[in-house]
Image 1 (cartoon, rainbow, N blue to C red):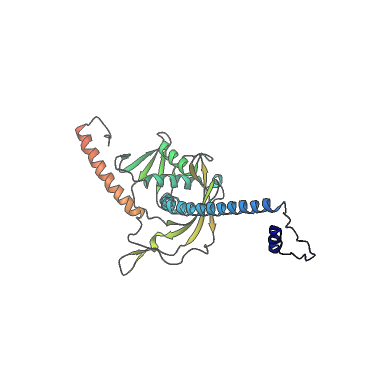
Image 2: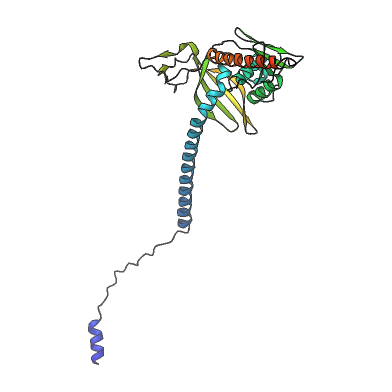
Length: 288
């Protein structure tokens, strides 16, 4: 009885409000939706990261290759060749001229080729190889005498070689690549043409490049890991192109200076050949 009284006294009456408590209903699509949002967020983050990496790689590609492109384009733009939309429409005389100058600008040693009467002899096969390296195989070279500005590269069809006079030639233009646009299998170069006679020296003794005379888009086609010139087209002045003169410590080497050095080397080589010929009269031209 005592236990019953204690239990009774500890009981607290609960009043009913008359309202039923609503239970939270679980939505069956909530979890999949959240999961999908999370996955999309991760994909978006990865896309942004990959895009950033691609941008960095592209910038690195441009910076790494501009110097190489400038060097490659020296013989291409120096004599201001005609524009062409397709390599098959290019002037063959100009393509051969570019190919021969590319050989001459490749850092030749005095004994790389023979000299006859003060002229360098370049075999047809070497010109063909340089032509193919620059322009590919879509248009085969047709070898003939090349006529340039104040000089001729005479072609000997019987012996299959070119006779290169060692005279001073000043290039019309020097290239300066201002933009590299790489696509799937092509690279489009925006090239500023700097007049070779427009360089000046500032008060500090530094050489200052002239303002570009014009801009040309040169398209390189990629095939089997190599790049070939497929077109050269005039273009308007790029909006991003700077108008500030480029300052460098040395003026680009002119063809006159290069040819003079080559002529001097040729004379030395010819003198050595003459001495050797005196020692060996039975040989018309001694091996360099």
